[in-house]
Figure 1 (cartoon, rainbow, N blue to C red):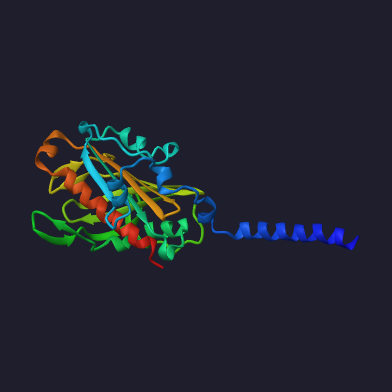
Figure 2: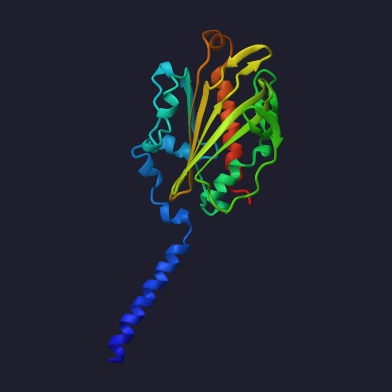
Length: 269
């Protein structure tokens, strides 16, 4: 009789332990179900190798060339949201980042994006000057679209917010003060930032990119191999600017600097 009672009791204890372990597993382990091949089935080996390299796979071209984004997560409108603005140029990058110190936690990704001041002084290669120069001489959060007073970066968070909006002022080496709005949305298995310029980018007195004409989405999902960091961007410019400014190069360099800053931040304690 005692044996018949003991076995069910032990079974219940075992189930309770498994349930408790499940509760305390990191969210990234619970939802990290997809592999890179699940996201990009049939992607050719050269592009796949680039995605896993230090620089990642990236491309930028006029939309008139028949540019097509790679699919990532259709329900989030990552690329269709960009196309809805009918941009002249389109850009895309794919990169897989090993988990390292982050341990695969999405909150670490969120904290990385919050380190806005660390964008200051990051270098890019200027073709006209033929040397590496800082892209942003200043980088800070500001209070809002009509209040340019700098505010400090937030401290590291312990949990992900469901959504968030922040306003940024970046003093660009060519465009002067540039103003961006960054909107965050999260799911249990991903993080998505949408960035747009809410003021015109200008060179001296010439408008280069009008307000709300630069749109970019930065998507992060923990995969089995590491963090998938995917970006899709579009920009609209006038015919005059297109003829006289290398917009493709200007946008590509800035996106690469921002992505590199972001990637470094992911594995920073």
